[in-house]
Amino acid sequence: MALFPQTFIDEVRAAADIVAVVGDSVSLRKAGATYKGLCPFHGEKTPSFTVNKDKGFFHCFGCGVGGDVFKFIELQDKIGFQEAVRTLAQRFGIPIPEMEATGEQRETAAEREALVKIHEIAVTHFREQLESAAGARIRDYLLTDRGLTQQTIEKLQLGYAPQGRDALRQRLLKQGFSPRQLVTSGLVSRRDDGSEADRFRNRLMIPIARDTGTVIAFGGRALEKDQQPKYLNSPETPIYTKSRTLYGLNLTKSDLRKVRYAIIVEGYFDFAQVYQAGGFPVVATCGTALTPQQSQILRRFTTKTVLCYDPDSAGQAAAERSSELLVAEGFVVNVMTLPGGGDPDTFIQKNGAEGFREQLKHSRPYLEFLLDRAAAEFDLTRDDNRREFLKRMLGVAARIPDPAVRDQFADRLAHKARVTEDVVRAEIRKAAANRKTELSAERVPSLQGNVRKAEKGLIWSLVHDPVTTIQWLNQLEPEDLKGLSTANILRTAQELTVRPEDVPGALMERLTTQEAELLASVAAEPFAPAVLPDLCVVALKYVRLERELADVQRELKRLQDMGDSGPASMVLLARKSQMVRALEAMKPPKELQ
Picture (cartoon, rainbow, N blue to C red):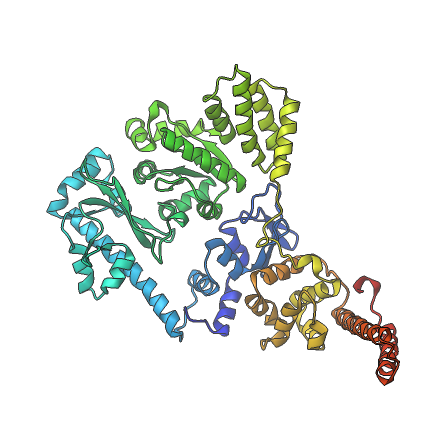
C-alpha cells in the first residue's frame, strides 16, 4: 500500500476524536482531564487505561501499551499504519487521495483487491444458482429441514454450488481474472495433472465475512448422505485466516455492543438459528475451539461470554479449552449446556427463542462447569481418584488470574474433593506462583527503567508544550544523545520538519511500537516528571560531559600504568581539569543528575 502524504495524515488525526474511537470498544468514564476504562489489550478488574482527548494519546498503566489514535486502531484491528489511516479517514468522511506506490505495493494491493472481487462474484454466482430451478431442492432443504426463513437465507447470503465441474471458474475467467488468482482465492483447485476445477461442487454455500461484511471465504456443506467431507471450507489465503475470523460477527456486532456479552457457538447452523431467533449477541467459531486471536477480536466488543457448544465429548472438550483461554485473557465466562443433548440449532427449532432465552438465564460460571465435568470422571470416594482430581484442578486454578476468584474456586474444589480448604488454597497458591510470569516484552516498554528523569522531562514537555520544548531540544548535539535510552525519540523529534504544535502526532508515527508506548506512558503522567526543559537539556549535556570525563580518566590510567608521563599525559590532565571545572559550573538540580 502506498504511503499517504503527511498533510492527509495530519488532517485525519485532527478529525479523528480519540475518545469516540476508543469508546467504540472501551467503556470510558471522565476522570478529570482524561478518560478511564478497562484496558482492551489485557485483562484487568480495575481501570488503568487512560485516554487524553486534548493530546490525542492513550496509555495503559497496567500493561504499558500506548500511542495515538492510529496506534489504537492498529492494535485493536491488527492492521498496519496505512490501513489504520484509511479506516479512520473513511469513518470521519475524509476523501482518500490517490497515491503513487512502489511496484511491489501496487501488486500486493491489487492482488488482495482481486481476491475480494472474486469472492463478491462468487457470492452472486452461488445466490443465482440457489434461486434457479436446479436450486429448488436446496431451497426446500433450508426452509423445511433447517427451519430458516427466506429473510435469514438472504441475510446470510446462502447459496448453492451445483455439481458442474467448473461453472464458477469459467465465469471468473470471463471476468478477466487469471488462473493463478482463481487458485490463490481457494475457489478453484489445481490437480496434480495441472487441470483445474471448482473446489465447491454440489454443496450448500455459506459465505464467511470480516466484521465489516466483506466476504473472504466460504464453507460448503455436503448435500448427499455419503458426500465427504460433510463440511469443506476455503483454505487460508492472503485475505482469510481461519483463526482470526469469527463467523457472523458482521451481522451481530451491534448486538454485542448493546448487551455487552457474546454467545459463542460452534457451527454455521447453530449461528443461523440463534441469529434468526432475534436479538442474541451470537458468533461462531466454525467448528474449532476458540483461538487467542479470536478472543482479541471479541475483546473489542465485550469481556463477557457464554459458551454454547455441542453436548458431545468433542464439543464439551472444546468448551473446556475455550473457557480456560478466555479466563486467562481476562474474560468472565459462563457455559450453557442445553437439555436433551441438543445443539443450539435443533434446540431452537424444537423450543423456540423463549426456550433458548430461558436456558441462557441458567448458564453456569465456567469454574462450576469444569469442576462438575472433571468430578464426573472420578470416583471421589477413593483416595487415589481424589488425588488425581485435585492434580487436574490445580492446573486449572493456577491459570485463574484473579486471586480472589482462585480462593473461591479453592473452597468449591475442597468441598468436591472432601479436603480441607486451607490445604487446597495453599496448593493452589503454590501452583499459581510457579506459573507466574512477567508481562511480555511487547506489552511493557523495556526502555522505561533505563530512562533518566531529564529524558522523561523532555518527552513530557514535547507533548504538552512542543513550541517551547523544540527550541531547547535543538540545542542538543548528536554526542549529547549518545548512549541515551531515548536517543532515537529525541533525534527523530529534532529531524521533524512540521510545525512545533504538530510535533507530538508526527513524532508518534515515526517511532517503533516500544518507543511509542514509552512516549505515551510519559505523556500520560499528570505532572511533568522533571523541571523545565532547558534544565533537562543542561542535565543531558552534563551526562555527556561525565561520560567523556570517564573516558579521559581511563586513558590517563592506561598511560600511567605504562609509566608514560610525557606530553600525552599532560594534555589529558589539562583536559581533565577543564572538564571538572565545566561540570562544577553547569551542575543541574540533584533530581536530574
